[in-house]
Amino acid sequence: MTIRYTGVSSLVVQIGEKGSHWKRLGSLRLDEILPDDAGCSHELAFLNGSIKILCADLVATWDPVDGVETT
Image (cartoon, rainbow, N blue to C red; front, side):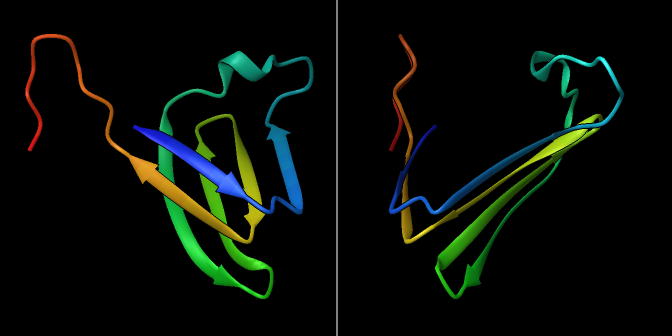
């Protein structure tokens, strides 16, 4: 899946443990899109941190996987 954001007004990445690296956020626990005064917020909560994006809008599209048809 590819997510494209338009009109991004804020991007916040929080890492849980001191000295942790963003590549080690861990397993995704929550993926939530909610309405916001700016348009919408997309929050991704991981085992060791979170990412929150405020934007005017977003579009999600499924990308084909080699050898697998999607309908």
